[in-house]
View (spheres, rainbow, N blue to C red):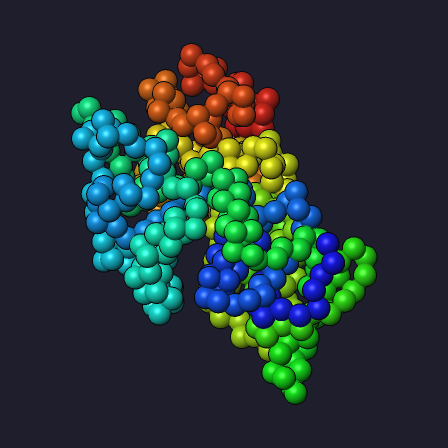
Length: 380
């Protein structure tokens, strides 16, 4: 496609944030909205594509969310237990999980706007479902939801990106793939931004009245991970897109005098299958390499030592930090261990035999011997 030389709103990034911003801009009456991403079209969606697309939102209970979902039959309703998740619940969870380091103003916006944002997304064709497979168990004949998170999108991150793309097309948002942001300069005569991009091997400029940056991630950049997250993070496995190199973030800091704020040493890091590709996510497997069934068992390092309290809280509140604990262990790996009863509760989305290596034995001693061939050093 030929890239237009002018637009009203330029959005950089094709993840959930970028598409939401572009669709909102078009909805507000902005005539020319252009979304660009450095990735080719087959890598659309950034890290959004690789998520389970679970949403935490304030809600008033089952009757509040039923109009949003497409996977609950009338017969199922009487057997579902879903307690309200109120603003104070969300705020308390943020404060507790973040140990008081969250930005109070941003946290308030997140909490207060969460319900209306979910409903806005649904109004633009995002297909929501109750997350029976990840967030509910059958207890006493009832399907009981837990952990403050009940919604996901149909087909996870893949479905979320597909729905966003359809909504963007319906909103007349122009999308340009393989388009890399090179520089941004201010035109003092108009107040617009003169944006230089590279597409199809050549550079060109776009005159934009406003720019929305939704592409700050540096997850696939070992140098930036080590610089900002600390020693050893260059060894972390890449869960998602290889195109999140942090170049947009560095451009904003270097050329636009953007202020670096927030907790730069914080991170969202999950337990990830050691057999996965270490440098990029898998578009087919997507989120299946996540391994978050540890509350039902034990995690041990290569010397056979536990290093976290696996059941200190609901999985929803620990999974994003236990990846850090694993990375700090010798050789940056861990074994997850269950007895026969615990293994029965593992979710197919993360532990089906076709996707994960399972090592089984009739005794702890025999299990240790088998694990020795997979890296356990102290089998005795």
